[in-house]
Length: 560
Image: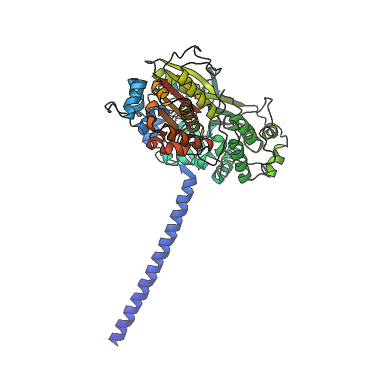
């Protein structure tokens, strides 16, 4: 009897333990599923609510922080510039050619306050200040100031673009912002993880992998528009933070055109040499939010946009496709642009039909759009940093084919003479400055199935031209040179590189024929990325990572 009771007790205990184990497993599985869901959701949006001391220190600045555009400085990570480098080392040769102050610039990383030497005071602009009652806004295009009375107003921040995170963190701490929403590049996700939160409610969405609109862009834009509509009132002021790359982040295709069809259209335009203005006109025709149409979501509110320009000439209506700019200028239509590029029969039928429909322009009576930084600022700061050297800004308005411009620069090196219309800022009879600075944005017409970008192709064309027109003895007689071509956003085309840096000593005189054949094949196949990845063991390939801004491209050419 006792034995039976004992057996029943053991069995009962076993059953109990089995039930407990099953319950624990169930709870564990539910927990894992919940955690997985939470993490997946967190990858798309973050809602950060509390104040962090470290970030609070950053936001106590009384201006809107312009992102770190120290592209030249970051090259040090690729080139490993050191003052005590051996004479034969690449970085040592760069130091000899460019001068010690440039090497100092290259090797100087951000200081303890997080302010870079290249940024200097000119990039700590008083673009946005608050005196306790008024917003004080400064337009860099004409140095004008605008006062906005916040008495009795509700202030909201909304932003998108490659520079939006840095702009967002630079909001003055004392500014009475109620809530904010921003859309940042997916590649910036790890950067944002280093920040905690501001003292107001905000949401950050991440989208546009590879700088192309995607499903996350569409979902984020839906939330963005919802945020605007729910807070629209006569007492509301929206402060928009806009920068290049915003076209891919703020995405709401018109009815009848799918996201895939829009992606196909963008890729086809880009591959056929469309410049940024042409591209953005077509984007506007296919969007519910571009071309001033975002303003239609806040008809009662006041809108103020602070804009970092990534287009030559700083045309407000084209930067990030002009979502807060009323379109008033006469220009070619999207349909005309598609016809000029001979793409009528190649684009999706829905797209071709949609661009033929003329739409009424958006209207808004209370909007201000201000340029707060551009490529010109970047070049001026770089020139100031090189003030101890014979340095000159040639132009900040480069446009046209990347290959042709690269070849033109090579001819300049070989002749040491300036004879072209785009060198209007220098004496055409000879090269006076030893360091030439160029800015702007070229285009690429895809000729093969390779991988690359504007800056990488420009540098490759430069190399091909040098090798094609020079014999071994001629190369020996060439002046020492350094060419750097890079995108200031750290992303040249759909790649993880931002450009290339090439100097004379990178060219092995014993392998000229081999190098030329490889370079020409890569150029003909639009495969500049893979060429620079292998040439000189990849030492000439620039991979600085995202810089947190976008003010087009920078080209530095040094001659000794």
